[in-house]
Length: 401
Image 1: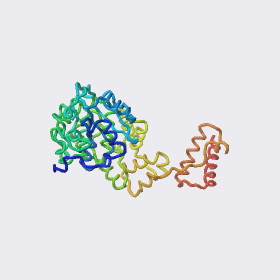
Image 2: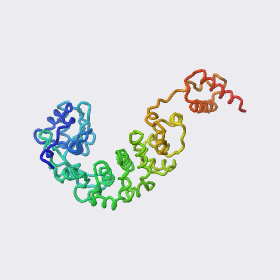
Image 3: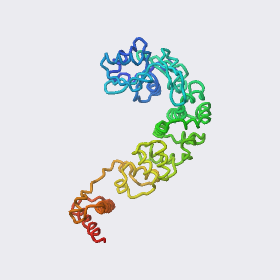
Image 4: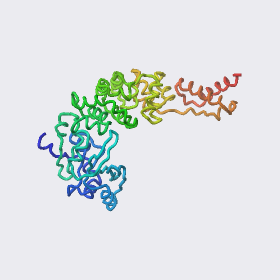
């Protein structure tokens, strides 16, 4: 590292509205509060910073008292673990009291507060996440070689990897996500060996935590090589045995890139699963995905295609884009399809009843048939043409016994 890199560079987030006042309230000028974690790491890498985290010697109660006295909005988001969220100029800043672990069981930790910066940094997962910086001077505090690991684009556990995984099993998945985002070349050998050896520990985690970490990984620009590595190391086998190849994921990412389509984690999860709706539904249930996510995953598993706009009309724009990308279809303007505005038919059930149908299931069935023909014909906006189409379908329905 050069001398210029020993201090935190200037960055827009450091001077955003209200930040200097918050730091003053939390005693940064007296050494009570420092920047920590991702905002320091990403600034050193020249990356944009969205979330700002502060570490402080102040207790959560003192943080709340100071923020209240200064009339800075405070939300006790993680008060049981020492975290208070300060809202400054409409943006959240997490303020966490220095901590040490008293006991861990692989899922959660019992903590105690400490005044020791190094002790707090030691409980973090990776060296690149344990960097701190003085808000006033920009001085970097690096207790475990994080700057060297950043320069080498290496993700390395603090301390013994097996011990850190035993403390929190989710660190297995976090290791691979951070390697996919920040790593270059082969992953740290000791970390990889430990993750593979303890993969079964993932079974003790809630499926929601697994899903959250997996979807974060799949949302990165190109996670395919890392996912392939995870498959080779047997990481998915205990909780997602359906994932056996990253080939479709790699092909999907190439298609997304070629079409200018932004990554979508659910679409990419579909690429990792067999293209079967029952499998998609089972995985969605296991991972406790939201109803919307589950529907999209199941839709992506259906290989049925149609003309682009009729398909988007029937199942939704995003779902149609998913299917074309996963099918490797060419010659389709997917960006245009993604932005396509769904037209309105202009005929409803009341109109069909006025034409002679009796209220009941026949109205819904006839309306669906009208919509199918209207979509296949190009979504005409001519009212007379639409009414004529409706009249023909109503007459057919009336002739049925």
